[in-house]
Image (cartoon, rainbow, N blue to C red; front, top):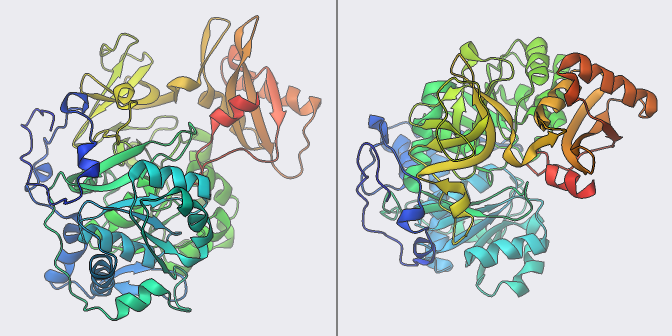
Length: 553
């Protein structure tokens, strides 16, 4: 491993028999610098995060606590979740021939059964490869081929696309289906698991054995596989959750991000189980479905994207949200208008944060007491952050100048055999691709993705700032802003706007919105072009795909 200010962590001997992934880690010189300054980040050489997140609660006598809930009356205790995971782990090893280090594709919407499968793979020493439920055969084939996936556990309702992909995936030789809906007819996996004992001895993986591969969610259109060690999962649990979120064992977590997305894996599985809390995993967590689910399960902590909070704010009065006490936003920048809209509707200050697939979860954030409209927050304990200029030099702290955000911590970018490692990691820093400044209070303030900065007529204009201004207008439901190439100005600001019901696009509305932006932010930043759309292209996690807007322009 790369060096750290507190010394490199000793690694255990790998337990992986199949070393495909380990052999394709970036070279030591291409890795970021890892730092383990907090005492709780000094992990033992051998670590299986399934034992740390799940088994330890049963071992210490807390197996009766509720671990995971779902629709259809599913309500599993820690002991019941452990038993199901153990039985599935036995199926993987005894019936499907899994050896430690094999990659296992998980395909299913969020559900208690998907969580049990995740723990089963980790217990057996496999490497989890999560996939978004909406992926098609071509996309699945790309993932399977890149990761050389040999095993798959798939919700039978999503089996068709995987089967269409299999002719292009010679490495994928072992597939079992399960029923992710809860209840109903048992599938092959449940039938095999039911015949197994409820005990399993976890593979004694090294702390730096690879636990999972997280494929990027596709804002750029070309997927990368970010690999994470067992210690990375536990490091993420030790940094942001106790220092910023500060949830307790009595909390009930709920949210929309899929477990295949590290925002969801952390917020809806690893973080609640790390403190002995309960999580609610529901398949469809659209704004219309999430509010009644919060009321039904008396959820206390919610994870979702800014667009969902904005959509839900108008419906809050129709639901009993008395249980809800903490709301977390990540995945894309939180506009100040959305923060205010949600607080006005619920009285709850959103906890904003920025994380990345490459670093697993949130590394800059602010708790409710320090939340500031338009700012993301402070560097999370356990991490370091800097703003770099165009030459890669650190800018002075709190200088207010815009530069590239750079991060170091206990987690970091480890792409699977990908030349883009050299773009993400420079001089030990993880370069997230975000343009930020640090204000006089020490808070980090998001400007744009570095490739979303618009240079128009000599001015630097951050697209998200224009979006935030447009969202303040009562007629605007959502919007996306890009720079369109222009011969005279280099680029012009172009906005794609979805209007709220009852409002009509046209020349008059264009003029109204342009004048509104001029009155809200510096006039030179106003969108010279506005195109009205019925919807905007987004990833399955709700992230705006600006590259698709640029392609269309």
